[in-house]
Length: 409
Image 1 (cartoon, rainbow, N blue to C red):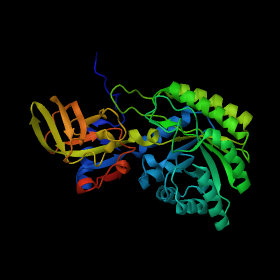
Image 2: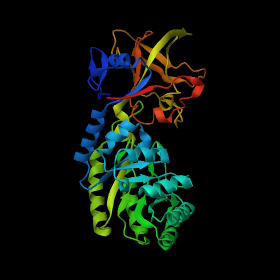
Image 3: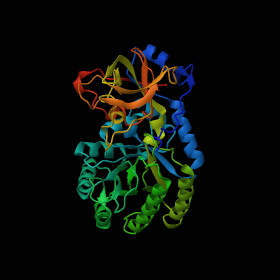
Image 4: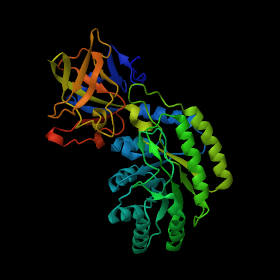
């Protein structure tokens, strides 16, 4: 059987065998900032991705950016000019969102453990709370009464179904996220009694899905569930967030997501919603899909060694700075992200090598038994698909190494 290969990574030009980002070589960027390791994000690629979505997905669809994918303030500022809204998962992310100047009404806050001070800040700002429990609803109502402000709320629903084939399942079965769908009708009755400003539903089943059929199936089930729950709503639904789930190719054998069938189905579902819930706008919530392919993680080779016949390329980066690429961010079986020697992508000589970091743990692996150009100390290693869930999801303080820089070009 032929070994699966990574999908082509064509988003960054290769000039004189060196990766270029934002019109500049990786080597030039490294020299300017004082060396690797660093993350670099390409704003033009983010803009192009949004243009692709706007031209492919149906008109009238609300596209929200989930800040947790990449909360770098400069990235969020840029994305706020391209999308229709921002989703946050903490008061810290709420501050980043509001600092962009976006209308607070276009910001939503989801998360199963919101503290009272976070509820207070969200209500004061005028953003929408995605309620994750009956208890959170009661607390939000009490805080709103104390502030003299009617909280804007939506109910996050945990459906009975899940997003099949997704890398991370967020709905279906017992979950800490949202309110079980069978409990929502009674919650909506109480929500009306409390006088909260009901905006709609948030139903997020999963993420990192590359199967169009699975996404279509989830969208159809989500819309039907929304129609059922809307019968119990204390006010007309104004926003119906049906989640995201769009994935990007990360591992060998992964292919780019085919948007066309998803777009066709969404157009039909939007028409259904317009007929049955005429006040409601349909939203999708994307993070990794919008920014993941626009970023690289870059570190420097500091040593090269042979151990019992295997080549080890030792770098000054690793799992403490890119947990996902190390395989320690939810992978059951470790798989390689796309990795290249950034300043000799093709190289005149190639070999099978392991790329590891400086940490004293065998988990510190960026690439295992991967074909690469022969790398020497001073060369740069680049990890593709690093624009999402990289810097902010990594244990950067582990073992006291300095943090990587973040560059937006």
